Image (cartoon, rainbow, N blue to C red):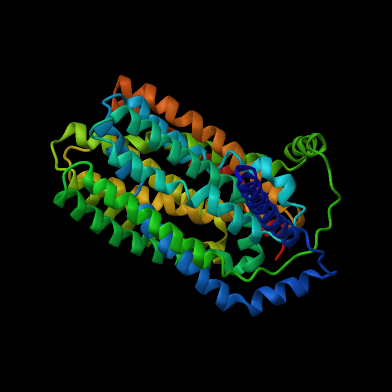
Length: 458
């Protein structure tokens, strides 16, 4: 009798495994399903037909995602949460390392695969759910145990935060190529600008909610509620993203192994002088952000203030993003992304210079507005400009190469920032301002706008 029950249980387990394998196989078949020959004009026509639909669903994706991310802001909320668990500045620096590098680092290692997939949406939606959205729930657990087990809370928090960040990076190359296929080059800046402005507006509502939660509830209850709402909003954004109508582009490149792929990267860096110079400028911008994660901690340590003030900082930071996104998105469509990145470097120079020299806490509101403008340039032009250095078939490689190199610098920058923070926040912010100014000089006088060089595809 026991043998029969065990046999029945084994059969049910086998069926479950078979169902999972069948589902995974269906996803792979969806990715690799043959695509009939199509011209670039036909791909562009399909993108144009679905423009309003894709604009709407991706706008809703961005709005919900930004509302959620405002509740786990890497510049304000998360550093405050970590500082409640430990007085050591190293974990705060680790937050900045993950925020700066996790999204960027994996992209080059997925580019070879993504470049040869005619359909990017199955990767973004199916894989993205498990790698990017699901780990948000681990932050809630970390906040629940924060009072009784701060060390365990730190471990759980960083596990979930790194899982989320790296998972987003794994699907990021496919997502960027999906967006490039859905929106023609002359509309991408507008789409990103409007979407991120609406998202930043939603984020301001989230920041207002965070102010109330931090005032109304003692630690860690307010963080539990914030992390829970962030996970819910992330789920809603995933749903709207899944409704995207992807114009499928046939693959025209032959398959190559990883050794051939990485050898080709060196050839790109040797041959494409303008792209190489751009990478130098973007790396300087990333290095100049070494002080980003320490601005909130410096303000809290220098002047006495309630925790709710950090929510106000988040709100003005998002205000800067809103203004920057709206302005820079349309500016990028008209004049290109290079100008916007120069403006972002200028805003970063002023922000860190003011954080260094600010005579009172009130000046930090201006600092966060400027940092919001800087972030909006990185969010719009920092992402979209990489799509314009090559023809569509090589886009994932250029995107992966650009973002991974910048991500490596983004990992080093907070480590240097942590060391300088131990010396003094003044040294940290002065160095950040100087490097940001160097990025502005290099971008303006050494890099040419790629849109006017005749390599941009639809």
